[in-house]
Image 1 (cartoon, rainbow, N blue to C red):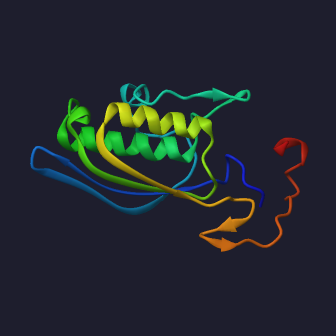
Image 2: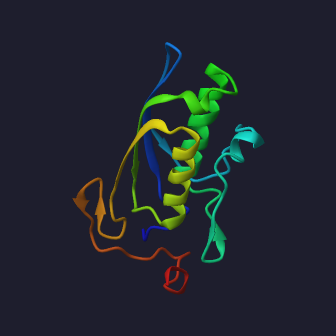
Image 3: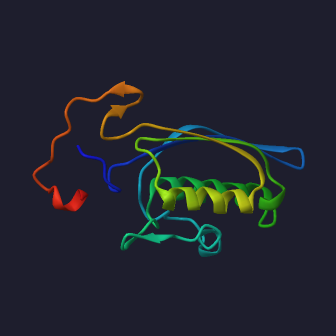
Amino acid sequence: RIPGTENIVAVVSYELHYRGQVLRQEPKVVTNGWAEGVHNEVKAMLRAVDARGWSCESYSQRVALLELLEAARSQFGDGCVPELSGWLRIYDSHHTSVTGLAIFCQFRRQAPQVDIELDYDGGWHTWAGKPRPLTTLSSEESLHYYS
């Protein structure tokens, strides 16, 4: 399928440190959605960016980072985020947009000591680093939607 916000996924893994404690996440697929179970004060840490008439509120990258922040606050306490250190690896099935970059910048501002490694494919042409067969539209999609 042609990549769209509804079918772009992120794969996230991380190792976070806080005052001698460690929080690890093995690689996990995160789909787009509403970050169910994430507290509103955590969602406010990574504001949704409105671009081209729609919001990135449900983008898989934002959901992955919100779930990370929620897990860290749950394990280490509400005030831990500025002192977190460690690493975050995130793979996107399609290159991120300026709105996705804005989400990463906001995360970096919140947790400046966490190293971020980002990798991605061009969802139109590659998948997991391999050439993709000719992309076709599904019966629900139209070329107008993607222009």
